Image 1 (cartoon, rainbow, N blue to C red):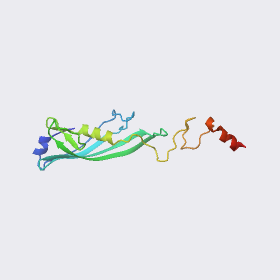
Image 2 (image 1 turned 90 degrees about the vertical axis):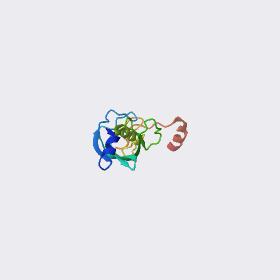
Image 3 (image 1 turned 180 degrees about the vertical axis):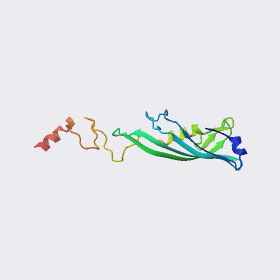
Image 4 (image 1 turned 30 degrees about the vertical axis):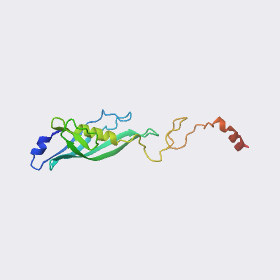
Length: 165
C-alpha cells in the first residue's frame, strides 16, 4: 500500500488511518515460507508539527517446523512499529526507525516485509524441552525412547568392559 504524504497533510486532522491484508506466502525466511496466512496491517500516518510519523500494527500467523523434531508448529506473531518519515529520497535511511518516501509516497508494504523478516528467530522449537529425533533411527524422542541399540564410542570400550565385570 502506498500512501501519499500530500493526502496526509491535506486531511482534516493531519492523519490517514489504514487497515488491510498482504499476501506474503512467497516470502522465504531460513529455507521456509512462514507466512501462509494473510498478514494484517493497520495503523496511521500523521503529520505532527511538520514531522511525519507512521505507526504500524502487524498481526499474522507463523507456520514453520521445529528445529529439533521437525514437527509443524503454528503461532501468532505481532509487531508494533513506530517510524519517522523522511521525504528526502536521497537521505541515508540507515536508522531502523526511518522510512523514506519516494516521489511523495510512502510504501508501507516494503516496511512491513522488512520488519517481519528481521523479527523472525533463526530457529523455533515446538516446546522448550523438545528432545528431537534419534540420530540413529530417526524416532521422535518426545514420544518415548527409541528401540535402536546405542553404539558406544570405541575409545570408551575399556570403561564398558569395567561395567560388565
